[in-house]
Each structure stands twice: as C-alpha cells, then as structure tokens.
Image 1 (cartoon, helix red, strand yellow):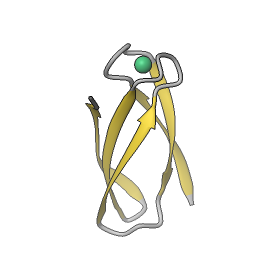
Image 2 (tube, helix red, strand yellow; image 1 turned 90 degrees about the vertical axis):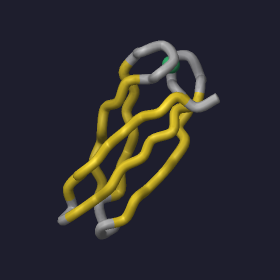
Image 3 (cartoon, rainbow, N blue to C red; image 1 turned 90 degrees about the horizontal axis):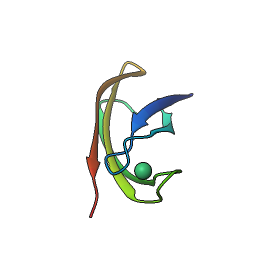
Image 4 (tube, rainbow, N blue to C red; image 1 turned 120 degrees about the horizontal axis):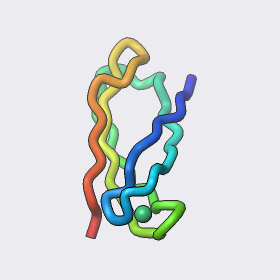
Length: 62
Ligand SMILES: [Zn+2]
C-alpha cells in the first residue's frame, strides 16, 4: 500500500509530491527526491506506524 504525500521543496518552496510505501512497520525511512520545479534535492525522512505516517520531515540537501 502506498500513499501520496505533498511536501514543500526547501529550496524554491513549491509543492512536490512523493509516493510513500506504508507497509514498513515502525521504521525510519530516508530518501532523497529531486524537486520537480527547481531540481534541487530534498532529503525526506519519515516514520510509518500502523500504516500511517507518524513523522514526516523535509530537509534541504546540499
Ligand atoms: Zn524546488
């Protein structure tokens, strides 16, 4: 099961969407996504618990 989460690019502050896999249990995931607008990378960290997003953070990647 996956869900689509909207996040804000930390460089240009435009909205982007990322697909999140909900089948991981109590696991921290880090992934790097390039912004669709400005192509700068954002590091996305999230935690899944009971197939819900418990924690979600976007950090600017240099
Ligand atoms: Zn951007």
